[in-house]
Amino acid sequence: MKGLHGIIFSYEKRNDLRDLTANRMPASVPYAGRYRIIDFILSSMVNAGITDVGVVLQGNYQSLLDHLGSGKDWDLSRTHGGLRLLPPFANEQIRGGGEFRGKLEALAGVRSYLEDIRQSHVVLADSDLIINIPLQEVYQAHLASGADITAVCSSNVSGPADATYFRVNDEGRITDTLFPLNDPTGCRRALEIYVLSKELLLKLVDECMSHDLTSFRGAVLQGMVNTLNIQGYVWDGYAAQIHTLKGYYIHNMALLDPAIRRELFPANRPIHTKERNDASTYVDPAGTCCNCLVSDGCTIEGTVENSVIFHGVSVAKGAEVKDCILMQDTVISRDAVLHHVIADKHVSVSEGRTLMGHGEYPLAIAKGARI
Image (cartoon, rainbow, N blue to C red; front, side):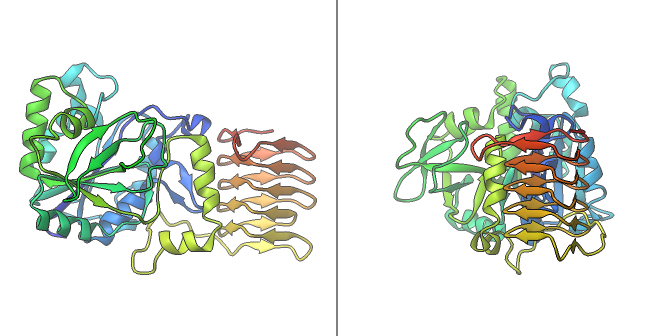
């Protein structure tokens, strides 16, 4: 899309993903058997025709760098524009290093990049959102409404504890921004996707940083709600904000529902990811694999039910895996029993071990652990 530029925020924020983010950003946490979380918003941008995307980085971003590479798998490896990875080098000039205090400070750290944007409008989005949204429709609605900012929101108010909520009037204008909120009845939940002009974005960054206002939510969405025309765009398709281990588990397991898979993976808006070429998965005739998402390269000789299985997982004879998420190259040895377990990459579970979590409190095993 010639008029729209993408910026994805992938800087360090507090979350409750525990061992899954010990060595990586939430954006690069594996998801749905073969993807990373960032693939969903990045693919939404690419499917909308956006050819220039900047990813604002901070924290343990090496895994994300390895995953995104040059952007080739998203058709963003280009001589001019394409995918740009924006490390926090400029943050030293702002406040002597440390974590970004908010989106505005993160944007101020890459201000020279913002100045060079070729498109007239920018879409800002978080990287921890599982969604497949037609952003070209959001952009067209933004232009048609004459809004200063268009905020994508959902009428499904069930979300993470730190979610942002909007009150929206009959004309679709946001009249109030609230956080935190114990009773969101009658509100809309923000999905942290915003469309605005490049010109306005630069003005907001300069104005807010000159007053040491670093939070886009507090300084702009709340502080300027009466001076800017902020319109809500309601998206009631599938959208999951991944901030906690429980949420990660629940939303992964929801993909076992064919209706949700069809909604999240429509043929006309594919989700792109870094390719890994594996042989076909082998399921032993004496084994069982029921109601599962299973990627390529797996060997299943035991029993696997209601689970999400990534590339290269091995489940030996006599092993029982139920209601689990096993990331790539995990090895489950003979007669091991796993229920409600999230095993990160390269985990090895020894013969006869029993690991039990619960749907409300799944047991997470760190990357490379040997149990």
